[in-house]
Each structure stands twice: as C-alpha cells, then as structure tokens.
Length: 116
Image (tube, rainbow, N blue to C red):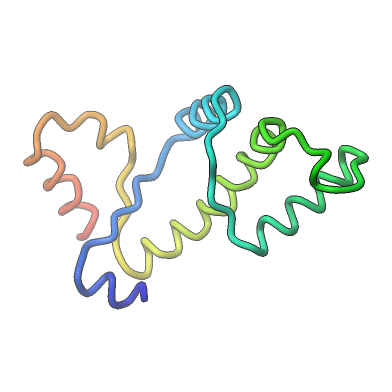
C-alpha cells in the first residue's frame, strides 16, 4: 500500500521539535479528542492503564483520563512509524522550517531540498 501511495504521491513527514511535540501533547490532554489506535497498541495500552490505575475492567475508565495518559505513548509509537515511512517512501521536513515559509514557493523549495 505504501509503495503504491509513494508512486502516486509524495509522502512528507513533518517532524516537530520536542517543544512543539510537548505543546501538542499538552493540548491533547486539555482538550481530548477521539483517536484511532491500532488494535495491538490499544490492547497493550488498555492493559497497562488498568493495571497502573488498579481498575478491573474498561468500563471503570474515565475516557478523558485515559486519553491524557495514552496520548504521549501514542505519539511516541507513531513517530517511529512516520520516520520509517518517510525514510523509505518520502522525505522529512521540520515543522519550524515549514512554519517559516511564507509562500507556496517556499514550501516547494523546502520539500525539494529535503528530497536531495
């Protein structure tokens, strides 16, 4: 699937700084939103959360508390995948550099440099 996708499009991973990542995590903790979790990640996370919080079953979980607890772990898990996909099928640009772009030409130049 990724190979086909990379043949038809350009996969660009926008890598955040640690500071931006921290802000993203803080925002998600303050205003949790529904998220997709891969089945394996969700199962492991759910088991860990239940154990750490001395809960017996999932219905005892406060959803917002769970999201605040799991989101940093989800980010860390996904970052590894994003980096791998970008190195194999696309390129990586830094979010700070993207933020500094003031035109579409700047964005194209940034991505072009990343492809070199």
